[in-house]
Length: 326
Image (cartoon, rainbow, N blue to C red; front, side):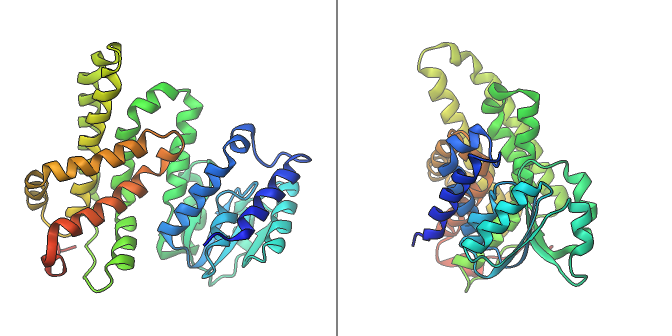
């Protein structure tokens, strides 16, 4: 059901943006997409408990997420006093369960209750994680996760380097590498939400997940180099890259989903035995990754999709899968 407070937020954001710089031209032109991405993220991550968003600016993604997440209390940190005033205003207008801090993160941290533990941290292109993670270490709960920030940080670096064309071609490789670090969180959410009577999978060891991500990223680059000559042939270039992307991403995300329940060799065997079905599923992920801006959420979409696919292919024995030891 659509929440009318989302429309209220959009109206107020555009109205205030006429007087103060809350969002840039790109964000304004694609505001509906940015709002929908935040709502989609909330649907997947299911924010609950204490949630931190810093560098909140015009309220993306925090305000839309807070609107549809009644079980969470959001803590918004924004140093710019004009943007802070807008956030205070919209939090009141939308009757959100939110606290707004008009300060920098380093100082705001000292004002947090000593017992607070954040289950989720979000932000958009604000600094380097190496700079702010230590400051929040004591306030992060055992299940805390920051996938939205990781994605937005990588995109900000890519934009700063001006590699738009290369970013489009290498997006599948980048998302495969990024996915290996936090897709277990996504898979765990999907499994517990949609398959509550079945035992959840076991998170992959960090070394194994990293090895899988690096291997797939390198394979992606190799396949794209082979397909590159087709770019100069009208029509064939798009088809070649699309097919290659479908094969690569279908292969990667299914492997990650299956290895939560099976050994790497068993996962590869299952992938080969169901190659046609997995390739078809990969076509949907390839279509998703081809959409600018939206494709930043490819790891979220791809992993959630392949968790369902693995359960479907496992059939009635899904509830009895032998779990990997941690």
